Image (cartoon, rainbow, N blue to C red):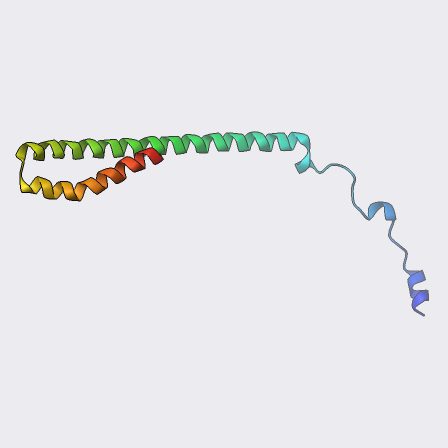
Length: 104
């Protein structure tokens, strides 16, 4: 009885089972070329943003280093115990600051 039911149901056309053999529009060479161009543009834009940020950070670190050096000169001329205390606090920071500058 099952064989009779199967015989009544027509089989699908085998040429359309796998779908169209045409290239999908989003995978065409022209589309891929546009996508790659856009990706290159976005990468360039990100590099510019990163470079700008890097320059700002380096400028801030240099300004901070200049200000600390100014304080150092002020206290060196003072030759006080206060200078020695401040230098003991600042020296580790200055070393860290210079290390950061080399990282960027």
